Image (cartoon, rainbow, N blue to C red; front, top):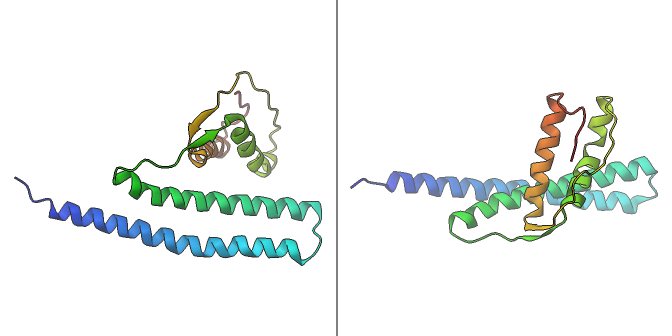
Length: 151
């Protein structure tokens, strides 16, 4: 037999850390979202400002979803399944591509979207699918491998 009390203590510390970090990150993100809503109420914005604000809100919501995924980790380890939703893959892909438009323009790439396959809708966690696509596209941009993206 082996004493696993040390491993249990490490697991408890990890869980406490995840919970604390998640909580500490959510508070400022909630403030950021609140202030972005106040900016919209302060007066008319030009189209560029509206677009920048929309992207800021989307990115903040995305980070919040990632934090929620951290909290879901605890549920997974406890044996509970996490929430899943009906996902339209094409919509998520298009959204991810739009979020990278600024980086694509900075690298002077030209984008052209033509889907060569028919997307099947699935039941998954939309944030996980978006995170996967964002990682793929972001890594391709950062490593200069995104010359042409065929889907």
